[in-house]
Image 1 (tube, rainbow, N blue to C red):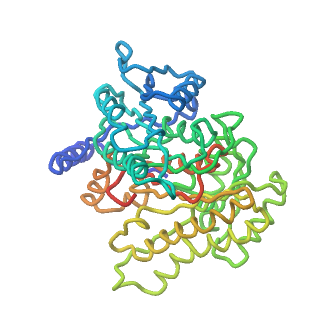
Image 2 (image 1 turned 60 degrees about the vertical axis):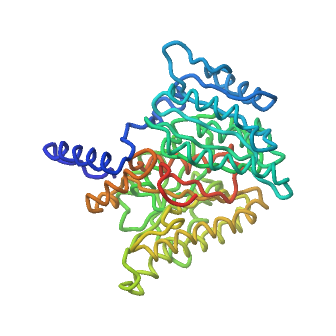
Length: 453
């Protein structure tokens, strides 16, 4: 459900307040971000022509791939007449020493004033590897600071992100180009200032616009908010969804699942037999015993300062947000060793948040569990990743006091809060076959809020 809309007489006051806060704090003015049109997915893929900076085999291969996606790809710095760059891709995979990046990075700097609204800057580089010589590690490691700092400089909804390829992963491997496509597209509207590690090759989907066609996905907490939007995006991408929520949310859950042609299951995920109930349900009916992806979205808040924390506040949050996930995956992974898992963490689990020691513990625990599940599921052909939302416009954040809410929105590099669909897009990407080379990672969806990595 969308947050409540302000009465018309108060909208002008709200805009004045927003403008005053933005000017007083020197923050970014919010613009309308480019997001995916469900009636025209990935068309157009970028907001304008794409400039590829760099030379050599990797830069050439990337440019060729972009051509295959029918993009207007340019290799010189002169923007097409009366057009602005929709994206700039900088190939840095060959860096062997500090200084080798300078020409390409400064060329990028020369075109930043010619970016379109909601443009994308994406770097392709190599991750620092064990045994790298100091000069190699220095050059590779430096790309992280470049991307994160550039993300804070861009305006008009533009973002800067990077792809860190492990040694042995080529720029045209499915996971590399799949990640590039996600970061170039409107799907990554609220992802900013991050480097996604790609350590495997992934699988190219038959249809990039419906990469989950034919898959069966379980989503917990599916009745409303981020969960409901996740169901819609997964269904848009071709998945057949089993939505799960508590009996008290049964009516809302049924409405969402009817909307997408999915199946609803009323279930308390903290029940000792929750995993077995899920196995029983996917064994019957349209799923026919198939299960490909498990999305752990269900979560609750019981915010209190630790000094005021009652046992039930702590225990219920940890039970729903963390212990239930571990128990359910343990049961399902035994039956489906190639399971793909995407869990909802939070930036509160990365950087902490006042009054959320219980929530922060649970969400940091989700990240820890994700990293532990990654090699276990990989052994069966699966993987585990987490999405960490920042300030997202939901019913929950609509209840935050006005001044605190406005500041929370404005401190991101994009100068605004995200929407549930932004989180859903990240979940769908990590669930897709082209993300098969990403395992054990945490993808923040926070507009580069001022927390963590």
